[in-house]
Amino acid sequence: MIELIIFSLLGILLGIVLGLIPGMHINNILPMILAFPFITDPLTLSVFIISIAVAQQFVGYIPSIFLGAPEEETALSVLPGHKMLLEGKGFDAIKLTLLGGLFSLFVSLGFILLLSTFFPTLYNLSRPYIHYVLIFVIFGMIISERNLKAVIFSFVIVCISGLFGTIVLNSTIISSKIVLFPMLAGLFGLSNLVVSISQKSKIPKQDESSEFKVPFKTVLKSVLLGSLAGITVGFLPAVGVSQAATIMQYVGNMKEASSFLMTISSINISNEIFSLISLYLVGNPRSGASVAIERVMESITLSEVLIFIGSICFAAAISAIFTMYLGKIIPRFLARLNYKILSCSVIIFMLTMIFLLAGLNGILVGLTATAIGVFCNNLGIRRSHLMGCLLIPSVIFFAGLNPQIISILNI
Amino acid sequence: MFSLSRNKLILLSAVASVLGVGIIYLVGVFSQPTETNLEDISSDLVGKTVSTTGYIMYKSITPTGHIFLTISQNKAKIEVPLFSNFVQKMKDEGKSTNFKVGQKIFVEGVVDEYKGQLQIVPRKTSDVRILK
View 1 (tube, rainbow over the protein chains, first blue to last red):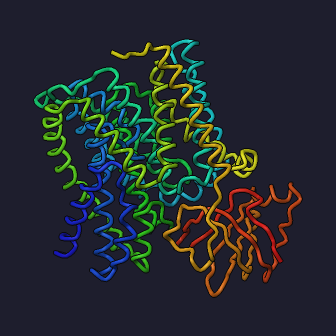
View 2 (view 1 turned 180 degrees about the vertical axis):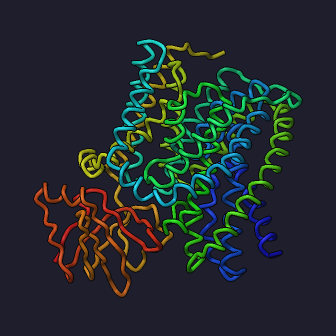
């Protein structure tokens, strides 16, 4: 028992470090962890992996919101989160992600236990219609703009980002394991920083004393929708967290940053939990962490699943406390820095990480994504249209057109 | 002080976007996957595109039309899943899907891992060819 707690704490510590470094992900270090399976027994090693995954989910919002440097899972939180930071409400943005994540922990566990027997049926029923749902969402995204000019601009951005995503995701120029990092970091992170620099933004003194009030109805709606979406992402391959967040933004009519941040956090947490538990429920790993656990454990019993659930809750609670602490002290420090220098440093760091992980092709993808993000921002339309880069390839995938498209494009 | 008007910024970012997408496309067209011996394909290559050759040692067809081949070379083996829409596309293009155990085939595709088993997932119909 003591060994489990010690390894869980070590995992949390490692998860916090990984979460704070943009571009670093548990998947980057899993091969190293799996190379030393003898350091402890399989169950303890699995708890170690789970703790890393959960801690990284919670802490990952700090670079995304405070530095505008996102991961795949936090890409869409950059826009409302960084905006709140520039309004002096960065700490509130962190609290919202924690609120969404912690509530979702319990809600998604409930949903998973309730719905687990229906997952195969739900998958088979929904699979042939997913591309229609995605087309409907894209159409809704475009026509929901405020006037005809904005609708036309949105259409242009969805087309460009869709073509960009289709080429990048289907070509062989970057490993499919890391291709989303340069894409989403450019579209949402780097472009946001470039625009902030050009607008001469600066981080104001953060308001830490304000009473944080969110209507319970908003919390409930965000967490329920987010948890359901996270689980859906778990059992539908090729629909990612970002696509689900975009869909929920329109389904839930979420115009406020607060509800969107809670929703995206709920999606991430419920997806992570589903990925870990699906190993036992459907015998199919859905994330890097669950693939690693599958390799470590020969088989998983119900009592081991209960230990996993316990370690998820433990890691979530400890990580939330750390995230609160870091969320309070980091903006105080950032407010003292020159925002332009800080943003330029983050841009250089992100480009360096992209180069290290994906080479020159990664830089090419990252810079193109940045240009598309800046283009969208200058047109004055919603940045969520940039999600065309994932939605269009998903439509193609679910419509079964991937081989045709790859043949036509000859990539 | 150098400054750009909003219209010029829009034009500049639009040109950079289109140019970037065009260059990525050309890089994608001209990039060739690494030719790899079957025994050198490991989980380190997951996500990367490789091309290899091997002998079909096992073949199964599911009721939904998916074909699963297991190819081997010098004791190493790997699975090659051909999904139903892919198989249909091969048939539409007049390509043989009559794979037989013992045949030597060329496969190009993305290395993936499914239920602990390494796979090469071909992306286009020209990625699978019967050699002998």
